[in-house]
Image 1 (cartoon, helix red, strand yellow):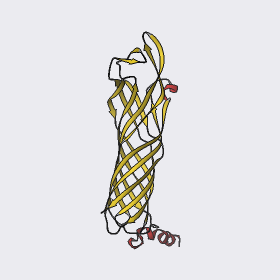
Image 2: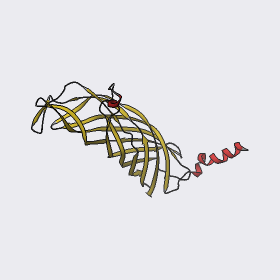
Image 3: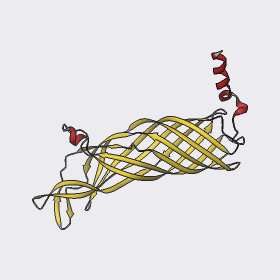
Length: 238
């Protein structure tokens, strides 16, 4: 008896007639605004001191654009490719430097650039309607980025980047305004982190009337985008 109950419960998930159509369209192209709550920049990720190793600079309220292309494999299954360009920096981090042969602590701008490339598989939930589509998704991502640090006229460049691979899960809803135009919202959970090797682009920098001699040794950092991601966009179906 239990076996029959299980079959009855899951039968609608595999019944094509129960799935809402996209008006015969198999492809979609979307443009979205992406909001991520938080990210962290670890300034000494390889330190032997656990306190320094776990110390980070927090970045909040990250907004960036994204584009995605989706293709319907079967009635309930959709595969999608999403690409974003994320950049965020802020003041508040401090750095100990030598200015005119004396030690000083200065404020610097810290942040990162990041390009997430994510491949997802979406399942259209059976209670979707002709106008409202509810999707549950998951997949993997490739994340490539660089460290931002600025003060005075000095910057750093990332000379070695260890790209990150990660997984993500999401819940989303699409509303069809017309048969080929829709709005979509999404909530995504992901936790990419990647390690960087950086160096300053010059030997000295002028800062508030003084001269700072910059170390030429390479230094390490780590970026972790651990916040919840919210997406709002529009899509064209064809």
